[in-house]
Image (cartoon, rainbow, N blue to C red; front, side, top):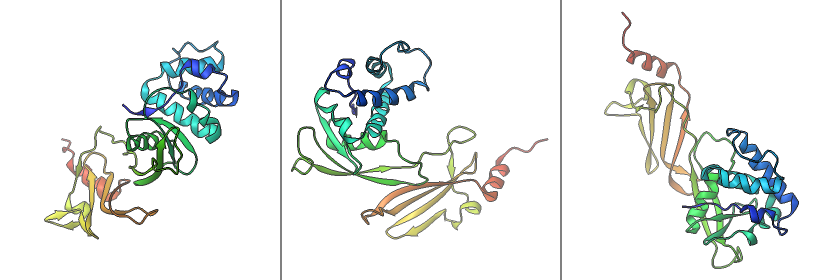
Length: 243
């Protein structure tokens, strides 16, 4: 299982970690604690001790996010202080051009995935591609051990008023050919337009998308559009008549 590396309570208390770094970690974890029930025993603890206690208390997904967030806040220099005191196999540096962050994962590719999926990125309404360099802890980023990876990050699917979306392609709403509604050719692929039969939100999938940073084509991208009059009218037509 891959995850962002987090320090133990002993590591956090270590003199090798600066007070500033401990403060950044405590701040990030404290912010996440506000989302949890007040059950973690940290009210009267020293901040440095509290970080170790809280990190052990948090579920793995939140724990990974806490440390990722802390690394962004603390910055490259402060974060790298954690490297020498973090134990465990398969440690990697991952650099997106804004600084290197330590990740624990079986492979460089998985380290890149963990880093991108744990990041606090600005909201985006369509697929983005993140380019990172990954190399083993203790090696130079420019060495033969470094690898470049691209990680695809799709937008968060908007919530549906009736639970999971049910994607359909009614010709009168999505257009296109009657025998293949909602599908239009695009380069070497197609653009597929679908609508949810419950809420009227659209999903548009492009199978010949292009990464603007590299020019690579043939990628898959997804974006969503809000319901409009046409889709809302179609959804309403599916509802049973009221007697």
